Length: 234
Image (tube, rainbow, N blue to C red):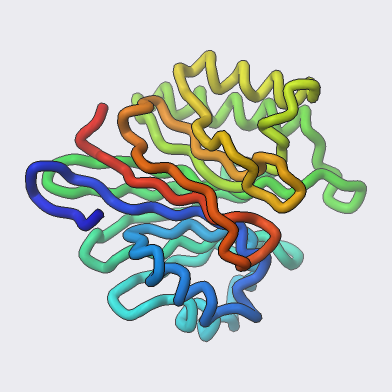
């Protein structure tokens, strides 16, 4: 769906954990063009804070602009955001949290706006010393902070929690947090080859998201999540 003045304003959005853009730049650029994506969120870019500009350039199709939010310490991780130049998407890094990597983006068209919050949560292990309890506390704080700002973003990214596993107490807790803020996680198909829902799209309005789909595009062991966004919906 292309952005137009009337009768509606929307965009095609895609989300995928690419597990490194470094060895698949052509595949990623081709994917964005194949999907006719207006906005693409890529988690696990594996780019460095400096010296990797060539990879960012190679994944950016003609007519698009790209921003990279790499992991500042260590390797792997990172988020890239690509969008059509005419959208003038504004994005910046949020530095408040340590259990997940994150950026905030605002799309403004014709006096209407939508805010996206993209995150990548590394799986906890002994090396990174992360744990689920701290993540849940920070996720609660994140949602509380946006509520105080009276902003209702679309939260999306790789949460590294199996949303389909109701037997997991951490999943039960995060679902409670989402519900208590009047939000809905709307991806209902596996987004990973091990048949779990790791990549989420969380929104306050079910009318805002249309034609959500999950497809294996052989970019990584994560599938590509796509949806049409109607920013006229409140």
